[in-house]
Each structure stands twice: as structure tokens, then as C-alpha cells.
Length: 275
Image (cartoon, rainbow, N blue to C red):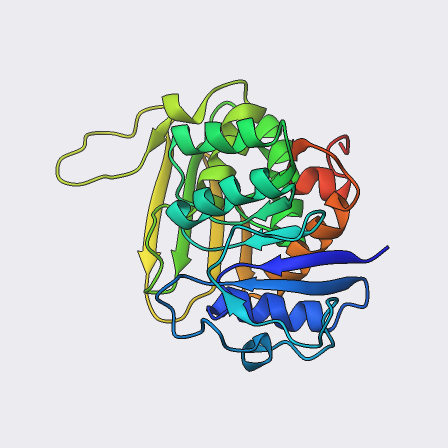
């Protein structure tokens, strides 16, 4: 079966990567491309942004649009944009019976609740990171977090390109959540996001975060378990957005034919029950 895709933010870096990935995947077909109303990409063929295969529509062209009123029912919208745009797309998908793959980060709790509510009507894969490698790291961290307690301090370091607008990254926060939950705690009770001045000694049980921004770094993450006499580091470094695009397409194909539900990449990759 062919998954029919709509790519949001089609003219952006991730949008272009998704269009290219879709072009190279015979199990997907492009049926729509979206961008902000003020974008110069509006009205331009998706081919200008990396699409190379015939579209699954009445013509061979898919033009970029900001129109959300008539999304093709049964399609899957892939969105890696901004929280405010994602929520608008979410409303349109619910109204039109369109599934969603959401890779946008930076949501507050009310927005996350809105996504969860929408998933009672449409199927959604919602994940802070669609890389197969990163999601494998999430699983490895569960084992490490259970084995390396107590007595090991946890610190999370992340670095992204200079244009990233949220910090810490959604992936870094998820890494912290994985560690905290594996140890029977909540990240909200342990997270320390800033340190400055005379902070005093480190409090036992803290999960510290350090954020770096610069250049064109796609995404580097390291979780450090620092004990007495040894240190364990689990790292993942992305050199291309292609791994995110490949994971997003895998998620879109996973949703094909599903009626409703909120899923993440553990569901897509079959890691939910892996131990």
C-alpha cells in the first residue's frame, strides 16, 4: 500500500529533505505541500524544493499552498515547523480526516494536551526525534539509568545550529524524561536547566542540562553518567537531516490505515516491548 503524503514547511530545510526522501521512496506518494501564507514558495511547484517523482493526483504537479480547507482525506501530513503552525495544521487534519506525523518541538503542556485530544479522532505519531539511532539511544538509556543508580550524577549536553529557537532541544528533554522515568521519578522534579554564580555543591539526583548553539550543527546529544572513578557517556551525533526524514516516512507508513491513536517512534520501530 502507498502512503499519501502532505509535507508542511515544504520550502524549509526539513521540508526539502522530506520531499527528497519521498521522491526516493516507492511506497509513498506526494499529494500536497504546505507553507506559510507569506512564503515566496506559495504557488511554486514542489519540484523546486526537491520533489522529482510524478505526484499521486490528477496532474503531475503539486504546488505549494497555504490552503488548509480541503486536505485530501486519508493522507498523512508530516510537520516539522513551529508550534503555532503545527496547531493550525492539527485543527485542519482533524477536520479533514488526515493523519499526522509531528516532529515539531517546543510545545507547552496545553499544546501537548491538544495533540493528545486530537489523537482520539485521528492517528498521530508525535516524537521529539525521528532518527532510528536516537530512538535506539532512548532504549539504551533505560538500561543504563536502571543500572547506574544510585551514585551516578546525570548531565545532558546538546548542541544545535544557530537558528534553533527552543532550548533545551526536545530530544534533550526526552533523554532526561527517559532517565528519570527509568529510575521511578519525574524529570520535572529533578531537572536543572541553568547554573550561574555561586550555586553550591551539586544536589544529589539532579539531571543537569547544558545547551550549545552555533554554526550549522544538525544535532548532537550526550548523556553523561558520572560516578566515582568512572564516567559513562552515551552519545548520538547527526550530520544530516536525512535520518530524520527517513524516520518520518517510516512513521507515515506506520499510520497508513489506522483510524486514531497517539503513537511515538517506539511504536513505529517495535521497541515498545523490547527489553
